[in-house]
Length: 502
Ligand code: GLU
Image (tube, rainbow, N blue to C red; front, side, top):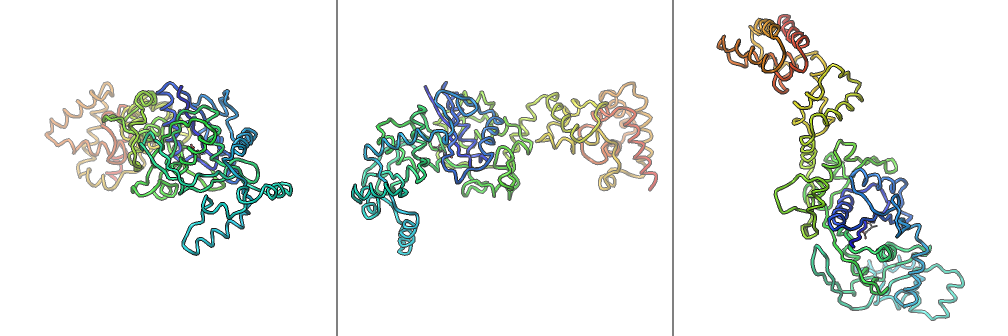
């Protein structure tokens, strides 16, 4: 049974890279008929941000990423928040003490800082490992009696992992293939802090083991921790899960990791939902008007390729197609325009009725009266022109309101000396139409134009100006059907008045 987990730390809003990690875990679990777990890794209390845990869970819910086990879902492997599992870690730390895999280190932060500074002066980096540990103050370098004395006096200590001196670790990553590490480059990482709380490494390994995680799929920033994790599994005598380290999401320039600053500079969010991070506002895709389906579709393709030309995938299709083998090794460049394109595609996919339902909410919020207007028809005519529902109002305003002024440039271009006269005849022609279906009005107007052997622009351009107030919009005959005969004639009359007055 495949069991995967998404294990965020509640240190702020969830970056879209994190959302993508959650998504790939979810797709992998569902594709393989497995389970998906949400575990909150909050052992580092100094980085804890109020509201971040809720935010993470709400964001993933908005994205449609579902969990089988977690804080909200429950499950038999809980608790699912690491701060609620302290006793468990204490027990496993004891196991490592008993089998000699860790040692107690009594060095104070000041002492270590001094050593770091001294090394730096010589252009070196201080590293706590086999080469230095015997000259430092820990349970390996001092006698048992001295250790007992320090403990009796309540001297604070950390537990450090005793990394073997010179071992070649060969391991495998599902994305990167075989990887080799030499332990001589590693430091004796702290596993338990002076406050008795575990660090990420210990808690993460204990939990992945106890929660029976089969595949660890996470960001590549964790690749340097992999040798330590492998050694930890070994120290416990446990088999380790399979690992897959996902490449980064890169800046639009392709240089370096996509950051909040890139988003702020170029005007796009890097978080799924808005978050107020201690007064710093973080923009969200939800608030920017993205559909979660479009956002997820975009993210899925940022690192995974289906091996075909297909770009639009529903969550079910992604689940069906997703395999780790098709996740690329190198970073994927984030493309803000392509992201908008995805939302546009999802607008196109929606029926006019569905777009209308969303647009009505926007109209309600703007206090627009649409009781006498066919909003569905407007959406049918206009949805291909927008990428977001909130763009609809600007594009369609003229359907709801009589234009109060006429675009000067377009007026100059489209209106000639005889235009007022031509429009007056147009009014009589339209007035005679038995109905206002586009076929009816179009054939009446065209017959008249052709009979006069005029070019179409002579009538159609000022006609459009009268109806819209400028040179944009769909077919004039489609528009006037929506606004109706009375309003159409009124608008043409308004332009005639304007032309006659100057
Ligand atoms: N808590 C880690 C994070 O915030 C989890 C890393 C992992 O998945 O092992 O990314």
